[in-house]
Length: 124
Image 1 (cartoon, rainbow, N blue to C red):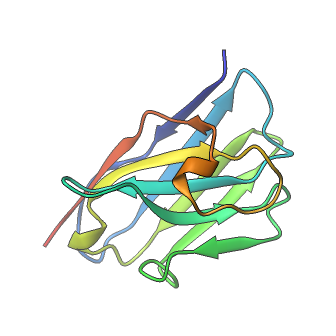
Image 2: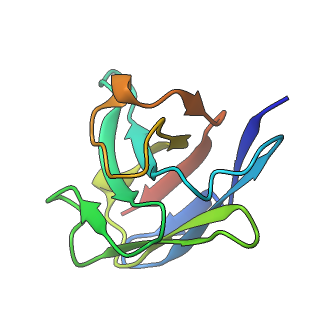
């Protein structure tokens, strides 16, 4: 059974940091691009960041550029999202996802494996 499991969410004050992890099991995703998305209450799920299969290429939403860093460790079948300078508007459920191809995708519907999500709450 293929699973993506996020961890590392929580409650943090504005300006603080969190590091999310996404651990894959059931198969390796070392040849697949992966991404982070988020969904705030009453809003659609939106793209946050994505990384190519090798980690050599990354892409970020404008709203998080310069504050968030996506990375991966293929030996551990794990992806990360380092979030710094957090703002209240970053509050959302964060999801990791795996793409069916090796290069970056930014559209929700293009990803075919999803985790269950982890809550990130940033207080002002």
